[in-house]
Length: 236
Image (tube, rainbow, N blue to C red; front, side, top):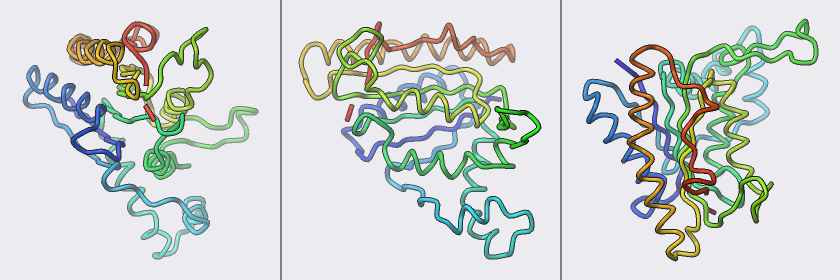
């Protein structure tokens, strides 16, 4: 039985494209594996708190007080969800070319020393190492603009996808897959084509991940299904 953690980061509800993509993924997966478990964390509607100076002190404390332990209780809960998940489905729009604040707050709560990564200066210039491994992340995005790929109109302006890819390594993510919708703010035929292509890419990705997960050998991230370029890219 596969355990999947679904995270919705959009502040929108019924009008959210990324929630719709995540719904399509969930329905497609459960149609093939009705006994698998989905855990839902809706950070768009219920944003995690921002970390504080006291939170940081508690995270790095070797001998925590009861008050410090309580301060980290929610972080522990979120990390527990990540620890149990084999696949993380992260549905998020692009806001101002980057992560929604709620998603950044979530990453800050779960990427934590001694819990999801270790820190050892004896490793030289790369002292951080993830503690978890073998997880797969499916990133489902929507972008108001378009052309964020190499050589395209908005090359270099996508701060969402690279940030998620980098930070998720410290959650044990080895396989990375991205499906996205672009042109949302234009609302023209290009948007319709991008949206249709993104939804059409869900079932093949589920099929790929299902087969790989059943053999305990997840797909190589270099051969992941990407909406970037061929299907479409992110919205604000």
